[in-house]
Length: 267
Image 1 (cartoon, helix red, strand yellow):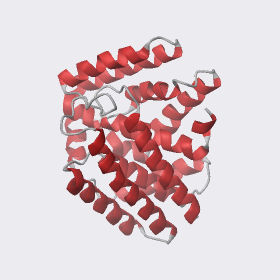
Image 2: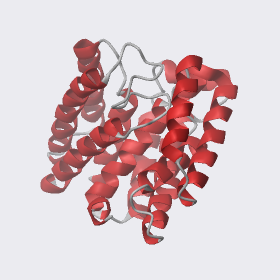
Image 3: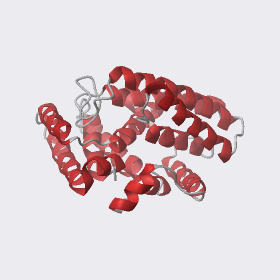
């Protein structure tokens, strides 16, 4: 169990770095620029992920050692504070939650059986949210009547298991391996109820992201020049100060899981 969870933690770190370096991504930090996030850049995000990496490894060891939910939550909250101290931002708060959720749920379903894992994720999320949901995400959800990360977790991460992973696998099966990750990005832009998008652009901003996601997925499937499209949309997102951190978090999680299953290397 310990080795399995530690391996998953390492893959979660790898997935987060792969998402960071994926370029171009509209409205997000990448190798080209910081998008609409002037206080962040590659170096700062890397520093944040170093803190997240330590947390994920500590959590995997604690869970393997029998840590209860209260201790798991304490470790996550401590990681959020450590990131804030290190870089002055909570940019990976969502990924701390998602990555921690996946590790803790995997202790009850230590295999690649995605059906069992989803059930474990949903059950663990239900226990977590019984005690309420702290932070600004609650206020954003209430303002815009969005489901957000809470409903995503309670449903067993459908954006990951029902959207991103099937799209990647479809593209690889069709021989479109080199751009399968961008196909996942397009699908997640359409499906994630992103609280950071709602906060930065409201419902109209979310519609923009979803329309762009549909166009991106179609361009990938048709082998069109989607990189130029993404670069152009990044300019628009930057001027509109529109971001999509929730999409980035689920994309990182998808890359982590595909690395964990070996599918990323095979592709």
